[in-house]
Length: 285
Image 1 (cartoon, rainbow, N blue to C red):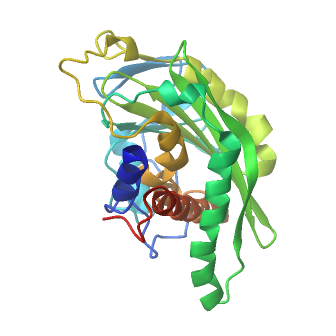
Image 2 (image 1 turned 120 degrees about the horizontal axis):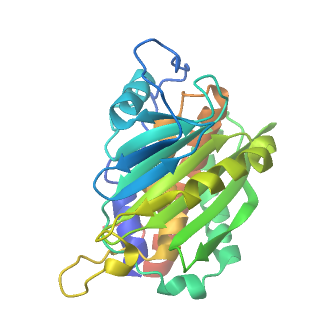
């Protein structure tokens, strides 16, 4: 239960989109943005390297923060960069590093994806109560666009959650790459109808991301290294909410990302609901 409690506390700690997030899309093609073209070897903090292939462009951490701040987001810590096909592409993959500590993957062998989804779905009622007060259409988590699956050989997990509001459908496609001291997330921003077309891009990037020697998952030293309070199953249920990525991305690609932000709120509610169910408490301490 400690894992889920930690998620709830982290989610409520301020890494969450504010209601006033900008909804206009800032330009990604301005002269001040310095796009780098592949092939390119990109160091990611002091943790990993992304071997960017030809046909992709990269915006470094400082430039990505500039784009995010232009969208009205002041909390941009942990951002590593942005990858796309070209500056005008209608999709992006955002990279972020979280130094959570070493994430145990034991529960990946027995997690119940349907139960995890049910928690997310049940948690939407918390949000929808408030939306009804504002005469807004309810949010619905419709299902897994792709159930979470973990590759123990590479210590990488990916999943996608689909949802809708009124006549709008949206999807959040996430990947986590586990390292010795934390994890790197790569999150695809796209429409539900484009997921099948865009997913191969994420898979290409995921295969080309590697932790450097001494920072790999297998380099973990139980005598000296911090262990994350969040297990992998709980992380999948709450990673998008904890990192605030959905909120940070809102406004970058117009109405699509506004819908993605709303999905993030659903995930937040689900995490809190899960905490209450497991602990019997009305709210996190």
